[in-house]
Length: 169
Image 1 (cartoon, rainbow, N blue to C red):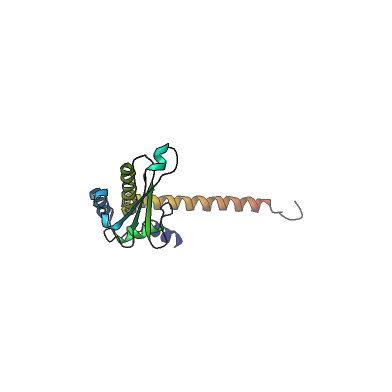
Image 2: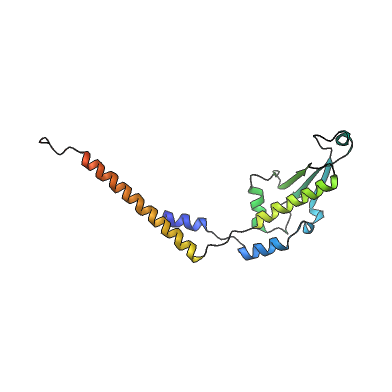
């Protein structure tokens, strides 16, 4: 029973099918992100760059209110907020920062690419397994179960042979 529950959980379906999510991801681009939902701030970047670092605001910080972004599917918004490798605030703001280059425009472009990448990865849904894959998994589970039973039986026989057979032996 437990194996069947694990199998169902492993291949659970999402609100969107793989085809719908793939179609959405292909049509989505960074230009489609509403600028009204973004809060863009610039500041002085740290690191090498000579006097340019001290004079020019090149570091770009973009914040997107995930909870308010209704153009992102609901399950993807939840997934973004739960991801460990994405910076978010307690009130549901997604934070993207870039100070890679010495140009503010290039850093803004880099932030938008990062943001679009995070959104695309959250929308993606794994393919549902076909019947052949499910059959292979079941067969592998069955053979593993039988191997385990055989090993236990051999171990049990070994223990029985070690027992004393009475005072005459």
